[in-house]
Length: 259
Ligand SMILES: Nc1ncnc2c1ncn2[C@@H]1O[C@H](COP(=O)(O)OP(=O)(O)OP(=O)(O)O)[C@@H](O)[C@H]1O
Ligand SMILES: [Mg+2]
Image 1 (cartoon, rainbow, N blue to C red):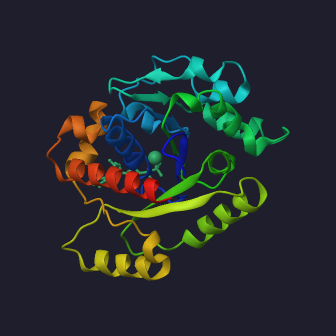
Image 2 (cartoon, rainbow, N blue to C red):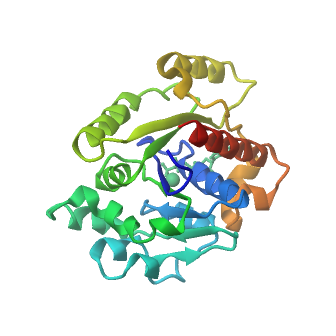
């Protein structure tokens, strides 16, 4: 795979596992490596939008309007304060898209078509998915080259993973035959916790080298920075969270070269 125009979905239907934190900070780390990055907020919660400092009340156009065709894609892209990082924002209106497209032709291909218009402008497009396997996630998987799966090291981490893998397989079969799993990334890793190591071991046994080498530690700075509308590298570049997300970006880039 060439190093440009790569589209990555960050997905796991489990809530609160670090999808948005990973989407924002991987995007920012890549942008700081001089890659042109578009972050796509595909979650009606709009956390990726507020997390990069896009104020929900101040933007009138967002992903919903691209789904309805009311605006062209380049009309909904917003520059963030981070150089090389743009975002397509979302808010609660996006809930309606999922319902409105149910009866439309090619409903699984809407996001793919939306992104086609702007894809040449970027090296990487990263899609933050909602915690469900509904049409928004199906659209993200159909539009993407690969999927990154954040996993929280907790007792029920593996529960639901089979369902996610089945969904990825069925999207691959029906809509996107080149789709593959980019990797699984452990989040909120607590090296002093025995359970963390047990879960990590179990994931490694199931997924082998699909488990990325970089684990993201639990770091309070990572939970603080969204309320400041900042990524972790700008918020506290020496924090363990910033170091980990920079490392994740390097591992990700290295894997691109190998593909
Ligand atoms: N490594 C970490 N260390 C500490 N806190 C974290 C870390 N990663 C995420 N968090 C916090 O955990 C919460 C859930 O993270 P996040 O919003 O990224 O998960 P999500 O999978 O996107 O959630 P949802 O399913 O609701 O979209 C947030 O409050 C976030 O700030
Ligand atoms: Mg989220």
